[in-house]
Image (cartoon, rainbow, N blue to C red; front, side, top):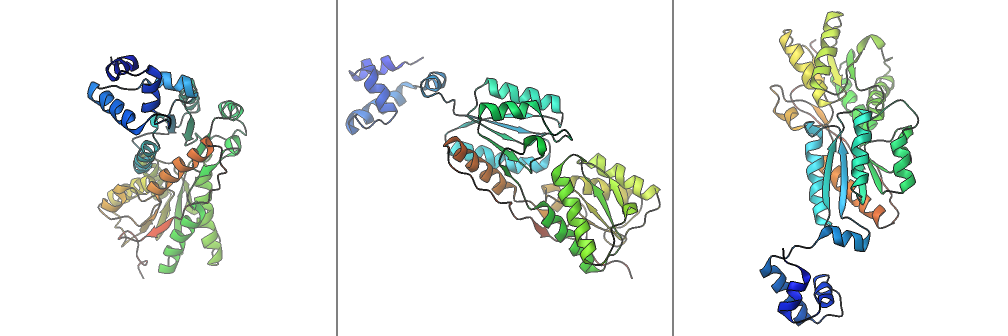
Length: 336
């Protein structure tokens, strides 16, 4: 392993001069700095990040905690976060919670033990008003940005989110404008604020159209394809005959679509369908899915840039990112 003193010996300068040159300190001449950097490069010198961290009290590490890397919603977000993190000269540690509070607790404690300089978290939502691990993060004053709307237990942290209510409202209004009046809704996880906002967007659009939301058209789903399939099967078995179905997410919508197609329904001839999220599978599903586009790359970039401001102790002001409707073949006017 090449050390600073090895470079210093070959360059015939002090170890301090080598250290300053590699850090681009101003009190080293350009000629000496260039000569030292070339020597370091030729020798394959790699800085000791642990030693640098001890000296600067930073690790140049960021922690990212998400439910699962298998969830397609996070693929683009994580890619953007990694790219922007790299641009700022940081490395990224990724942990998965599987939407389990106890696993989230363990993941966050491991990242804190690694002395990360900041955290990006998609919370595991729960009904409790407090969560001890979030209290500890706040007490330690670890710069933290949430990916998604805050809940009571994490409301003290800034968050990057999309216009959930407005996006869902636009999806429902799209179906109403086609002439649909009997629109079923497949809801998301009960504790998740984003699911509540999307449901409220649906309800608000109905009320503004003079339609009273009907609980008999609302079915509890969740966040996965399996959840969507199960809720749709319940809808079919209960004899519900909507002319359109709105799902809380694309994965739930895809589960719904598969079940309806297996039951002999045609999309959109018998029933229109819209989702939320615009995952890649939505566009290439056998009936391309009308959905609400989340700006996933922008969300990831904005999250990292907000976190960098917190690390630099700057003021962070955030606004929800727009969620726009993407109309495809799964929605059409109802049969006359």
